[in-house]
Length: 162
Image 1 (cartoon, rainbow, N blue to C red):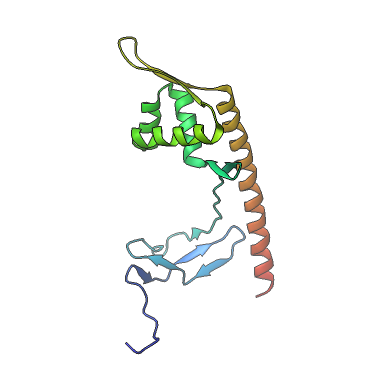
Image 2: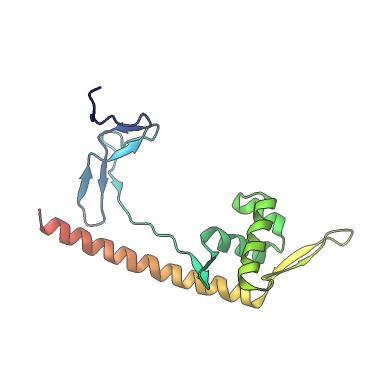
């Protein structure tokens, strides 16, 4: 290879795949990671969609993101940290660490815990934790709506310039 020549990384394969946006525009020649499947010939084009994540911080420190919210919702619905961890596919140890992180940032407990034993244990969210989950879900839903609208506007503006 000549000095300065570009060599495509081994884990990226050039594939001819087609993505269709909500406005009906197609994006061609996208690069996909090796091992992923491009659209098969004759198959319906894949839809190009925006996806956003949202994190909340408190005093400049990370408080929670989507997985933390899923953990809190799981605890609220199952009454168990263990069951919530299984439900979202995260180890118990990681879940406890994340709960401790959130509680350290907040400065107080978000989950009331009862140790197991003969009568069984359990966990419940505090009212403030439930409030945080509700606020996050409303904000995240609105964020996605605004993102979708901005994406459609960008597509329309882009297709007018062709």
